[in-house]
Image (tube, rainbow, N blue to C red; front, side):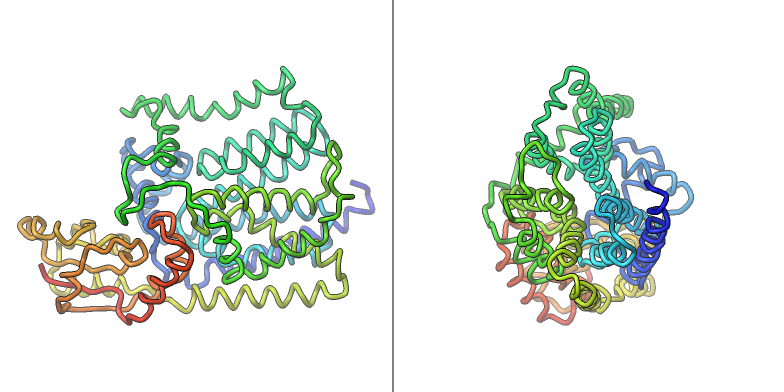
Amino acid sequence: MAISEAPARRSATYALLLALGFILLTRLWRLPAAGLLNYDAVTDWQTALGLAHGNGQLLFHHASPGFGLLFAPLAWITSDYRVFQVANAVVGVGSLGIFGHFVSRAGKLGPAATAAVVLLAGTSLLLTSSGRDFTENTFSLGAASGLLAAYYQRLHTHQPADLLRAAAWLTLGLCFSFKLLFTVPVLLVLEWWAADGLLGQRGTWWRVLAIVATPYVVLGAVGVLVGLPWFRWPAIYYRSIFPKQATLAGYHSAPHLEPFFYIRYLLDFEPAALLGLVMGAWAWGQPAYWRRREPLALGPYLLVWVVSLLLGLSLLDKAPRALLFIMGPLAALAVLSARRLRPAWAASAGLLLLVLNLSSLQGELYSRLPTHYPEVIAWLRAHQGQRIATTVGIGILPFANKDQVITLVNSEHQLAALRRQGYQYVLLDDYWRATNVTLFDSLRRQRPVAAWPEPQLTSPALFLEHAQFTGLSYDQSLAHQRLAAQDTLQLRLYPL
């Protein structure tokens, strides 16, 4: 870096840090009032607690050994889910910082443009909701951002060290989420585009392979020591692609072509991101920017990343969380394209898009708070409810007392056996609506002894996230959501 560039880079860094500080506020705003609604978030929290207490059988839960192992030491100190939530929110902001730093340097952005990229990406509904939860998405986002930066460097330097660095980021991401596998076809396309034979060099390809294989060998050996098959981790990948049986909603995973699912999601919930895609295609669609064997500029590079992932994901089962790795690039495309196409309008357009994002956060996240699961627990405690069944959803678990036993049921036919075992109550949790596990008709016709609203269970995003589980289309998922939203009470308690 030239000496004259140093003050400009420092200013961009300060702007990046200020923007990240604002994003952290949006992630922590009313976070204790949210609870852990998502089924995966609750089980990830339970996994960290289980690993901390020596339950090695949970090592490869969700094919994410890194996530559980990283949070297990925290579970030695506390079991309060809110501490885990806050820690994960901080990680999510740090992951966004990796992306912002890369785009700022690669695009030689000034303070305002740097802040705009981070603010637009960080206030997206998807990144905010995943950053307020307790899942591995925050870590996989950071690894994907590091991979994006490292591979961009590899394309411009043609050095084996940069390719190995990209392989290391990919490997790190796979320790937290199998979603990084979705990036491999994109990397192969870019490798073909580079056409420099770097990957095929004898001293390079086997080092890449060794880096990627290392955690599978090491953690596979650890798994054997705790009584797991050495192939458990890759076996989870296999079962994700070829499940043995249908889901509880009756859906057996199969190629599910709905090409406009993600475009419609962006249009309805992430208009700023969709605008970034449109503007990016307009700004860099000319053939002059696409010469094979020549390094891609930042805009075309991000566009390849976004379009390739969108096309590939459209062939698989759908869930908005699959867009995790492209929300940052879409925000960057919006800013870079605005600066290129209409520089005079860039600031005003960026501010308008930020307001749209914040309005979406208020309507879809903050306005649905607080959670009412603590009130359910308070009622049960007042009425000596110690053994409780809950239907499909387990959002009540983080609030339960240590002396309470809560069991998940997926059908009302399981209740008779639980009654004989001394269970006193069943909570009809409307999570069954999002998962489309409709096996509680008789229970619903009874009169509850108590009931509470839980608006988070009527969120459109929640229903769309479960389309992968239900097999429902975009329209069908939202039709179910609208039906659920007509009800004013989502948590109903019945005596057994």
